[in-house]
Image 1 (cartoon, helix red, strand yellow):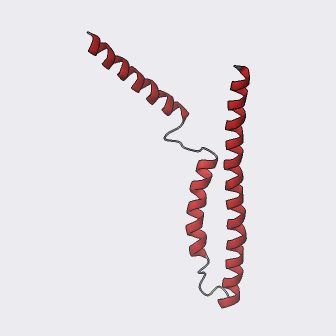
Image 2: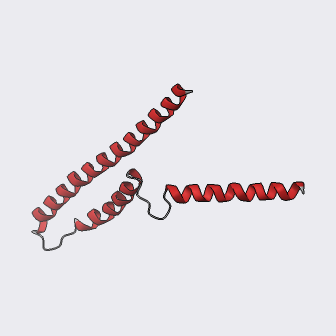
Image 3: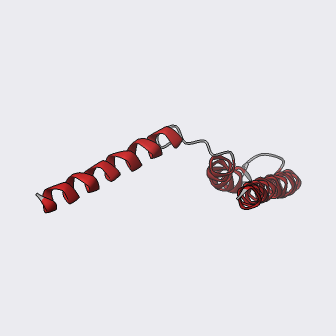
Length: 102
């Protein structure tokens, strides 16, 4: 039983590391590409129109959502909320079962 428990913990930790690795790869790609676009923007028109901010903003929104997922930041639906909802639905099921047998 301990081996199975350890294996599950290892698998969850490995998945977590994979999530973080994907986020950091996305973050580094963002920094490199946006820096390139900013340089290209400056070369083209010397900041008269900073068009590189549009892709930076769009990709930045996606990156923010990726960070929320990778770091498991969710103020509304955290682990406590999940547990409360699970208990609530389990109690409702028990009440339905009791009513069926009465």
